[in-house]
Each structure stands twice: as structure tokens, then as C-alpha cells.
Length: 454
Image: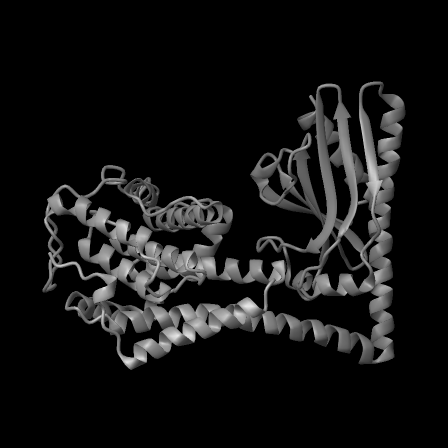
């Protein structure tokens, strides 16, 4: 089998120009660094779902984007389409693992890493062939160039990975395109070859300081045609597709950053120039919201003080921080995020155990089965909570399984407190509407003592 090498690829003027577009977009984005963390997180999460959905869709998976994102966010399978749901979950897992390897500086271009990725990709789908090179010949119907004999698979893959490890001269997009084609051409596995090829393409792109190239379902015909042309030695169509999709992703980061700046300016201008009556109403809404949140914190302080007086072993320390000002409150309501939003912390300690909880402000996380249209008609700023054991790092309590402590959020609707909690019997989210602040504090403290300090 003839395996073209990167330095053998001849590019047209169009291909070279598109590679230049990618470089220009990357430089513009670099000049805007550091990117605001909240913008970076939003774009990466959006891209992650689209990336998993698109790669699986190209292989015939029928989950739509919304279903894919729900599975990735929850980490759970509904059971309706078990194979397709597992494909989404597994692809998301390996994509995040590769990103972690890159962040940690772990060498990725070796056979063991490739086989580990494939093992996870097919876990629970085809365990017999997961993590193994194919042991027989495969025939691709209608293809002029068939995959090589199975005895050549390992040496050819090793050759590809060796090239990727040692090639520091080839343009990042071109090298990623070549990696994509080479792995697809070798067809090293019984199943999962396309997804592996696209994963390694994005790995090479990210390692080159670029970003993923999401080949969309609507690109499928052009994509397959481009692979066929590359088999014949003409890589231009495939390079152009990967370059265009890479530039699109880079420009998305740039566009979202500028949109965030525009929204920030808009919020400031509206706050300064709006009808004075509207400004006064927002000010009143903010002050009423602050009053409700102060009531919650006050009840935590009262409960902690009384328990400290009643117990010789238990110590509960409540530490207060300034409430967010109106500007940051409006920023949070607009879904833009804000810095320094801690409100108070509660430190529980006994001779045998210590748990810390941090209460901070952020956006409300909607629950489709619970939030009504009326709820959704107005943005919410929620009191969120994170948990840390001893001196360890704190993790936000989000999903039902994150902690036996049931509280997840406290927010205000129509001047009344609403508590979002986990119902332990069903592991489902539940809203307690018009709940007294004292009950919020008492239930939370009692659960920490019962489930964390025993």
C-alpha cells in the first residue's frame, strides 16, 4: 500500500490561501488573549456537543444535537437507543481525555494511546474488538483503493504516529489532514475508524496551537469525495475542507468574544441611559433580592451559633463576604458571568472530619421538567454551592449524584425564595417554592452533619 507522506503533498494556490486564512485567524485570536474564562467555557461547551454530534452523525448515528448534548451533560443513558447513546457518551469521554493529555503534556502519538482511545470508544458497544487492531481483511464496497492486509496495520500505524511525533516542519492544518487521511486509509479497526481519524486530526490541530475542525453532517458528500481524491494523491479538497472548518471554529471564538464585549457595553449603556423609572425598578428588584439573600445568610449564622453553643465537638464557622453589587448582579442576569461572587462559606469540623461549603452567585440552571414558562420569562441569579472535603478543592454541587447533601440552588421568583434540591428517593430535582430561609439553613446544616460528619 502506498502511504503518501506530508512532504509529498502538492497544494494548489487555493489550498495555500486557506491555510493562510487559518494562520491569520489564529493570530487575531492570540492577540485577544487572555480570553474571558466565561466566554471560553461557553464556546468550548457549545463546540464540544457539536463536535461529538457531527462525528457520530457522519457514521449514521441518528441522535440529534439536543439529545447528544443532554447525554454528554448528564453522563447518563436513557435506554431508548442504547448503542447510539453509548456512542455519544464514549466519544465525549475520549475527546475530553485527549484534551486532558494535551493539557498535561502527555505524549499521544503512540500505539498504546491509540488503542486506549479505541477501547473506550467501543466500550459497551463492541467489547470483542475494542482496543484491538483488526485481525482480518476488510472490503469497502465501491472503493477503488482497499485497506491494506491486516498484517500491515500495526507497522503502518506506527509509521504514521512516528511521523506525527517527529514532524515539526509541516503546517499544522496540513499535518492534521494527512493524519486524518492516513488513519482512515489504513482502516486499522473493525469499527470506529472515521471517529478515530477525526479525533487524531483534532489532536494534531490542538497540539499545533489551533482548534478542532468540525466536519458537519452536511459536509458528508464533499468529505467522502475528498478522501477518495486523497487516496489518488490529490489532497487539495481534503485540506480545503479541514482548513475551512478550522478557520470557522477560530472565528467563532473571535466572534463570541466581540459579542460579549458588545453585550457588556450594551448593559452599561442601557443602565445609564434607560428610562429613569426602569432604572429605579431594577434598583428596587436588586435591593429586594439582596434582602432575601441576606435573610438566608442570617439564618445560617443563627443556626451555626446555636449549634456551636450546644455541642462540645462540633464547630460550624460562617464566614461572610460582600454581596455582589447591582452591576455584577445585572451581569449575572444577562448570563455573562462575573468575578468575586462569593457570598458566604460554612466550615464544619469535628475531631474526625472537616467539610467546607462555599455559597456563591451564578446563573440559574434550568430544569425542563420543573421550570414553567413564567419561570423562564425572567433571568435568575441563583445562590449556588460548592463542597470540599478537608483542605481539598471545592466542586460545585450540580448533579444528583454529586453529594448526599440535597441543596443545589436558591433563587427568587416573584419575591419568594425557591430551593432547588435533589429528592434522595428518586434522585430527581425538586423545587420547594416559597420556602422560609430558616428551613433552607436548618435542612442544609442537618444534612451535612447527618451525611458528612458521621
